[in-house]
Length: 296
Length: 329
Image (cartoon, rainbow over all chains, first blue to last red; front, side, top):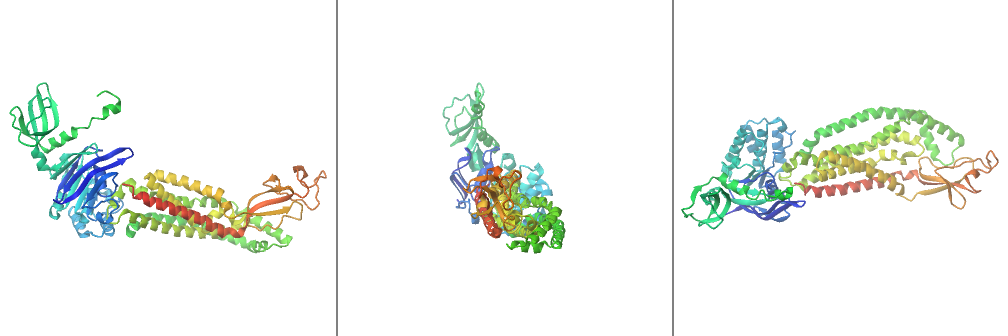
């Protein structure tokens, strides 16, 4: 399978804190991938590394087999919309389309104008005066006009209201479906992206917790409910992701490597959200007690 | 890229030109009336005659009187000149500091640096175009100021090598302005926010300018020494426009008796109590006036050196700024 984005033990440090550490992942071509993690997990850092804004401090990142930092030619294949969709606010949408044409060798101005016309965005109004949803659409139209093979969107819907969110994602899906563009969108809420993505990368505390195709992830995770569990091995379970216990009963979210046949356990299917939450809950509270100087 | 630069800065360019035009509208009439008075008093001839070493005492007195009248009328304009030397700093604050800092503050660097041109080229084109515009602006300003302050500097004894007037005219403003802009750009790449970048630019500009002016400029060329006796017909023929760095009165053995002063007695003159000239200061017979100075004809050499220093600093800062741009995310 063709890999669009490959990271190998990738790390980025700001001062002495690692924003991203030991990050290894592969993004196959043609996927719509969600990059999910809480705020400060390193999502933006990963995307900035992928688009060459940042230089890795450890490991490597490759996009279409090339190292993106300082690689101007490689930029032509990557469309990027940064967080909060920054645009020159005193430019009109029409001027931004012209600017894009001046800044890119490959540029489909007709496509951008077509999209913006369809969305009813006024061409002669400064984009600073447009609504957040409209501005996000302008930024997306500009990114698509590059005809990128990889589209990176950093929290594209975070600042939009629910209706604008749906419209944005719909129009995104409509345009990448035909072109076969690989898309990587980040969000701190899975719910935003669950409907559109078919691949998932979960990032937490600067490390990759989970990565894979959505169907596979849902298929290989199960919730087990049974008598209180002491941590021993269960047949068919590769790893326990998260366990919660009452006096007599244990609820486990597990990754399976075969059918769980032990009749003591009731096996339930899980939703994608259950899986993600289980991985995110793992490992978030390790440090804060010692940092606050109180007992855990 | 050129289109983008123009589109981003056209409003700013318009206001800058408007400001320059307003300044010209204010200063040109003053300059014209100043030149009118200057020629009415016959001072242009005076300046030429006084440049000659053996000029008649009567002419000298007449000319000095004329210069004094001119000075009484217009010397307050020297204060205006002091205000005008701040203009390069303003260009640095409003053109240099926001160039990168504004992009980063608004996040638009992530938009423009991820298009197809690459940020090194972005930086080179932007710095180049803004730099070129600034050089033209500063050249117009420097030449205009040369024209404007010319009568004032001719009337002033120390001439155009003097502090402030030197900084105002010729090609030095090009160096200052370019340096201010480069400092602003560099500060913007380090602090990445407009207000701190502007503050640092202002402080840095004043600091470097003052240091060069006070510490370096008097030593661009070895200063010349001139000595003349304390007894004589009048002051010796120091050409107008020499920049006197330091002066004093020395005893025959070379010890400096009185600093920052000059003594002039008529030949064989005695003090009221019959003592020899300057004896109350401890001067021995044969004491002489002494001064270190930079001759007026070194003006363009000094302008060249001063401009060179600031252009070199500007180039260094822009180089560092381009390097830093590659590190901003």
